Every structure is written in structure tokens, then in C-alpha cells.
Length: 224
Image (cartoon, rainbow, N blue to C red; front, side, top):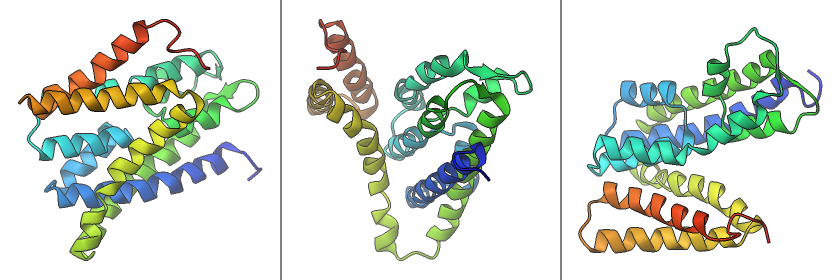
């Protein structure tokens, strides 16, 4: 297995996803979800941070429509990722919709940094390993949750915040203005909930409103 090969990169992603998915499985069980429900969630959604967010919102009684919209907004970046590497994919052995389903932050980063065309089978190899790491970790986490002390099981909930920090901080480090957008979103969410708006609609307003306002502002999307 040569250094930087699709298998080697896929195995690295597998290990990372497995460990995070274990936390998802444990926290999902703690929130009252069944193993079939959590497994189906990972099988059909396969969206890391969005799954953590969704189970938390559902457990709090937020409506399904609001959860779906929030998940779609959070995952909108995957559309840009897919478009960014679409023209570099070489081969016709794997249907493009299948490849699009498997695009995640880490898979995209591994593929986009490769020199030259990306063979469809190479991309699929990384995606399959990442996928089984996530689904397998979800199952393992749920099962392990039966044997973990309650204190450790409850502590797994911190994984949600760790996932969001890992998504937000790198962008803020590169472009400090993004930190203002994040702070504004938090302030809007706090304000909406303080006024009595339920958590689902408040979350959607907090996600969409600051993003639209700052996107319309001159030069806010440009690096400084």
C-alpha cells in the first residue's frame, strides 16, 4: 500500500469516523433512540455534525421539518465540494450520484489535494471506507453504551460541541470576520428563544438571517 494511496487515506478517515461515530451512538442511546433508528440514520444520512444536531433537536421535541431544514442548511457546503471536484473525476465505472452521496469534509480534502485527475474508483474507495467507519462506529457506540458508567455515557454529549468547534474554528482562524457572523448567529438564537420562539424556528432564523445579511455586505466573504 503506497503512501497517500486511496486505501491508506480511506483507512485514516475510517479510524477517525469510527471514533466520532462511537460518541454519536452512545449519545443517541442516552437520548432515547433505538439501535435500528440510529443505524438507519447513519446509513441513509451519513452526515456527521448534522446527525449530532438532529438527534439533539429531536430529543428536545423540535419538529421534523425544522430538523430537516437545519440539516440541509448545515450540509449545503457539500454541494460546493461536489461541484469543485466534479470535472476532475475520471472514469465512468461509478455513477456520479453514488460518488456525490459519499462526499464529506475529509473525503473532499483528501481527494482535492491529490495531483491530477481523480479516478472514480479511487474516490469510491475512500468513500466506502469512510462510510463503513461511520456506520460501524454508530453501532459499536450504541452497544458499548450499555456497559459504560452513566457519567461517561452522559459526557459523550460533548462530542456535539466538539464537532461544531472543529467546523467553525478553522474558518475563523483564516478569516476573522467569520467569528462575527458566528457571534451574531448565537445572539439571534438567544434573542429569538428569549422572546418565546420555539427552538426549531429560532435555530433556522439564527442560521439563515446572519448568513444572508453578512453575505450581502460588501467584501464580507473576502479574506483579509
